[in-house]
Image (tube, rainbow, N blue to C red; front, top):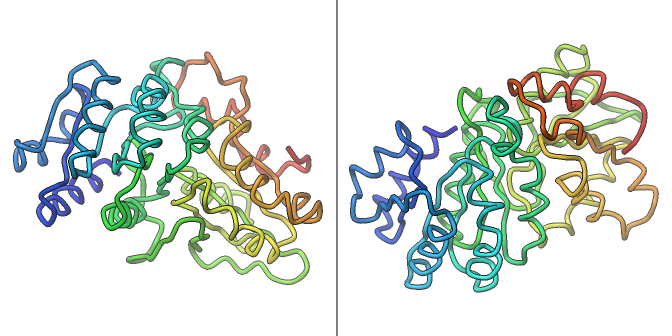
Length: 308
């Protein structure tokens, strides 16, 4: 996903001379193509993330669409005040690009885990979340953000994510994107709805469980506070919708979905089953796969009968 992002950003910057990139003294072996081609629009702000976000807001106020790139925990939690007051409040075209959301940096410990980033960002007015599930969705999200500059949070995977779509896709905020050709039908129609890199995990678990034809698989790569109105229409098509995310269950994507449909009655609410990470992963150290499993992102955890 990282290479897809930077190659796409270089292409977009070739067409739009107001696109700029700021990094916090990392991203080496990834950001060099942009830095070499557009040195006048590339800034290494050093290990000073709050200042980096302030620079981005200042440049955006002068007409730039600024992409800020760092490991997921640094430009979010460390820069929460700057995103809230400088970027979102002033509705400035700053895209906060984070790599390694969830437990991607599992071996580096809790300081490098991004388990509450959706919860933080989604409550800020004007912020759009872009959480692609594969490199094809990365390209689609980047294209959408460049066509619609605004305060945004672009959460991409660390490396090696497979393509799960067969070709180019059209995306819009708040809309479900069908993945593959699941054949669930009839009165037991079910769906799994993911955001971010848990798309590949969902696909893998469906295959392992022999349920690939029992569930329709969807991704929602774009969502925000303003996109809740479309969700009830989609949920009504299914008796059960499992939401899946590599984020703590509390306050994340599944919570956003429940908030979106709560006004339409308990029948729809009862159809939602939230699957994310339990808070027992906080403070644990290990590989991403080990920690995801420890936190409940397993076949058993996803298909359990209880509703959270």
